[in-house]
Image (cartoon, rainbow, N blue to C red; front, side):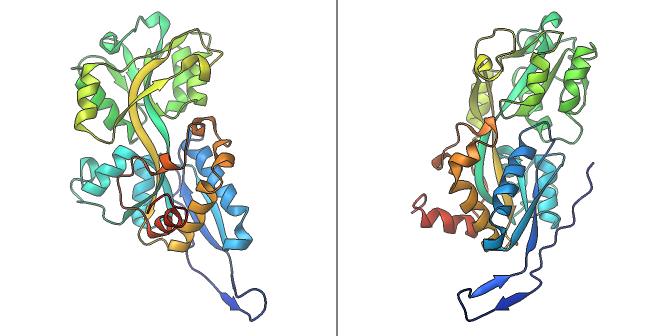
Length: 327
């Protein structure tokens, strides 16, 4: 577990003058909760921080990105005041705002606010070819990683398994490991398959598909998933273009699955100027931002308002209204 960062959110000194500069602020420090460096959250958060820091003389803000355990950790850190922004998933944000799942005892987390949505995160099932896994039913009797302990993807994996009538405690040998450790474990024949909710392309998936022990992606689709999506509006269908994104992998057709949308969230306590600055730099320079990670290649300005399951922060709303994205 990474050390919870100390967030300095106090404006130390304000210097006023009557010349060309009407207001100048000493720098404040804001933190962005990322995720595992091998995934998409951390490099995406790093890109945001760099864009904001490039304008630090304009905004008086210096940003850092933190390596964390991901979506749930980031939201809890924001709620506790240890982080200012954090990457999360549309399903986790929905559950927190509505007091569901791990927030059922705590009730609705009314302080959470949305800033913008990002890439789609597909629930990805990677299996060794020699394990003979072609569909979800073939997981029976195999050794399968369902994700690292405490990660938010457990919920999605469990719902997918349940939709197919599978139980990780009964039907296969379930283990919990970090996704970044899965490629090596598969090469060592210690696991047959693993689940990973991630934006594509992913370095972890690339390592697995290009390893000496041949692997492939397994579809997670059909009527069972159609019913799951119909009952849960934060899920959506997804297609992974394997040959386009992983040219070094064994030839494989596009793989159908489902997933969630990565979302940047914050707290109602975070100053509107901070949120406005970050929103303006990212959304206002979208073409540059899209170039910072391959998973962002399909992102559009209008799409950044899709799948937001918490109220918009006033700072973000201000920018969207100024630019006509919201009336």
